[in-house]
Length: 149
Image (cartoon, rainbow, N blue to C red):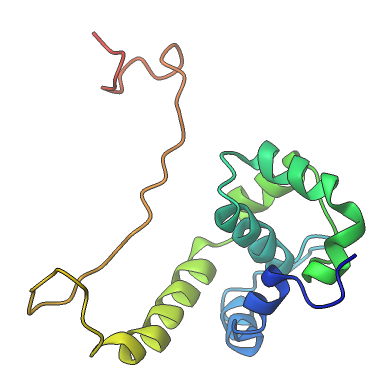
């Protein structure tokens, strides 16, 4: 049995909720929401990113499997795939984009003078997540890909 805090809950402590709420209020992100507010949406997507989930269905399934631990992880509730999908479609993306830029501005000065082993570059180096979602070739026949002809 776990006697301390989960790693995910410890990571959430470093995320500035006040700054996130400022971006939410700027873009009215929680306007007319009942259950899934922007913070809970962010936490669930953050959980999916850290646990290398491949889809919204995978995120929701994993959260439901850990239903008894959600409170201790810092997640208010698990939602179904359609609610998370609808929230991703309807919420203003600028909330998360501006918050991501804020996090980058917070972290960049801390590691600006840290050398990277085996790399001798005088300019800044950025590492971006390039997660891709597999597309159905039948639905997106116009998209060039691995199996297109």
